[in-house]
Image 1 (spheres, one colour):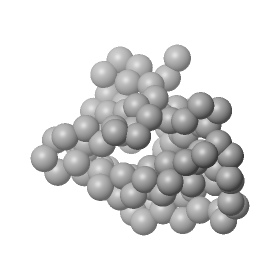
Image 2 (tube, helix red, strand yellow):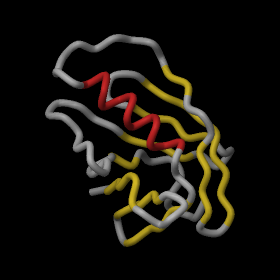
Image 3 (cartoon, helix red, strand yellow):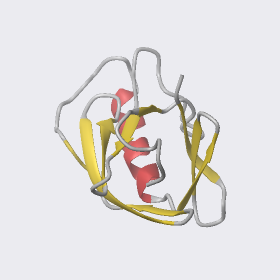
Length: 114
């Protein structure tokens, strides 16, 4: 990945159509060895990724198997997020914002660092 991407978590601020619920955190950390890991809200997840120019593909995500009943809707939020990761086909960095988009260039996920 480009310099500055790797290591630090990118907190998800705007999962498109699915804002993060109160009291939950979603993030993604991209490592130089082609792995993305993070919190999906309740469980930790992991997947492989590959990048070439602005193209970015994220493989199927695995995760821990904890159940979180609170806050309401957390498990649905998590499943939606993991599904959205699989639809990513490109990316762009704009200042402190990482935008992940689908094949048509439509925004899928947005991450923002402080």
